[in-house]
Amino acid sequence: MPEQDVQAAHARSSVTPGALLGALLMVAAMMSVFWSQNAAARSLPDFTRLVEENSSAVVNISTTTEAASQGSGFHGSPFDERQLEQLPPFLQDFFRGPRSPFGGSPRSQQPRRSMGSGFIVSADGYVLTNNHVVEDADEVIVRLNDRREFTATIVGTDPRSDMAVLKIENAEDLPVVSVGRSKDLKVGEWVFAIGSPFGFDYTVTAGIVSALGRSLPSENYVPFIQTDVAINPGNSGGPLFNLDGEVVGINSQIYTRSGGFMGVSFAIPIDDAMNVFRQLRDSGSVARGWLGVLIQEVNRDLAESFGLKRPRGALVAEVMPGSPAEKGGLESGDIVLAYNGEDVELSSDLPPMVGRTRIGETAELTVLRGGREISVDVAIGQLPEDGSQVASSTPDADASGAASPLGLSVETLPPETASSVGVEGGVVVSGVSRGPAFDAGIRARDIITEINRQQVRSVRDFREVVSGLPENRAVSVRVVRQGRAIYLVLKP
Image 1 (tube, rainbow, N blue to C red):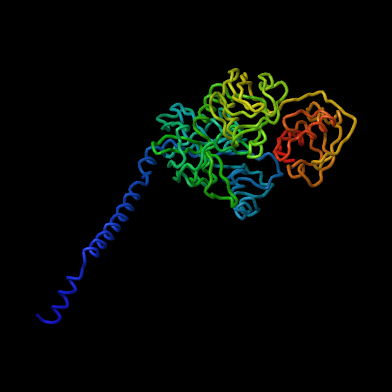
Image 2 (image 1 turned 90 degrees about the vertical axis):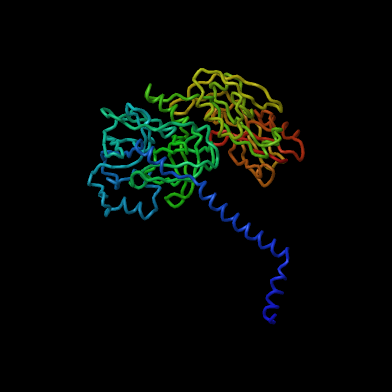
């Protein structure tokens, strides 16, 4: 055999079983990655059919508001002022400025125009959208994707939930959305929106549910759905769909630092929206349950001071006089842990629960008081229209002043001050130096009404309570600041 053939045969014979097995495993791994990538691609949702089936019930809403005065330098833009504020600064200047193609001259007296989205929920012509889309509008035009246009009547609005109900008349064969249940939503679930961002009709965007039950400062009674679906000015009032083609929310707001979409958008849950819709349709107004308390979040230090193993619940900072809460026996310092059997994990969970309760219905609250859980029954009242409640009190005065080892000095609370803020007794902080009180957040002019769950009605009470405070343990302090009661945590 030639030498070359001998060397080749030797090389072939040198392939060991181990090397062959390794090569096979490498090929198998590569095939596994290939197939897993294909499977992942196939698992992504296809929105084509869903959009075709549901876009016909989504509408474009345009409004016209007649100019009220010559003081405004912004007329005729396709965006209302709230939508305009979400645009980048240079675009705000463009649409507001004298060179705006929509008429920026304050003397032009052109009507103001805005755009938004909505959707049809009944065959007889009811349309849901956001309140800020139609607020103060003199004319509302609803346009379908088959190019039919109708003048709509505003049936009712609810600024607290940012919702509006419209009605179009003399329309036949109206497409209607399928309404789902937002309470069945799960974080991570795919959702998509159809709307008119920046006036581009029937734009489709998709994403996932990022969080549930979000509370925003301006709307305490709405447990918003947070998503990463791209929402921009013009999407407001449009529907948020799940993968069953059901509406689960109404796109309402975005969080932005740039003026445009930044990955955080908020939708009104459809369960809450339909409740508002039925009330506006039937009576033209919305009645919400009212407890009559001011609440705050329970953080780790407050949980420790009240004897909770972990932060949870809603801490009652103040009970309004004459409110359902006062009549039912709730007290400041109570921590609401459950409402009608439903756990209250965050303080923001409580207002929507109360708001959904029927007026006059008795609600069972599980509260932590004095280190033990008790049950309190409260007959729910109706939330006042302006959200206000007149408070009155009889102050308890003391003529002396005092300083304390906590690093603060206190004085007698003047009767007129006590009356103006609605407290019965207490001491006013006249000065704070570096020390436990300053670290706790207590400041001059704060009114202290309670320390370590003990009432402080006078300077004498203050001295006695402070002298008996436990060492090296966090205690709660109730202060009234600018008319609002809050709890702080003091570590002597």
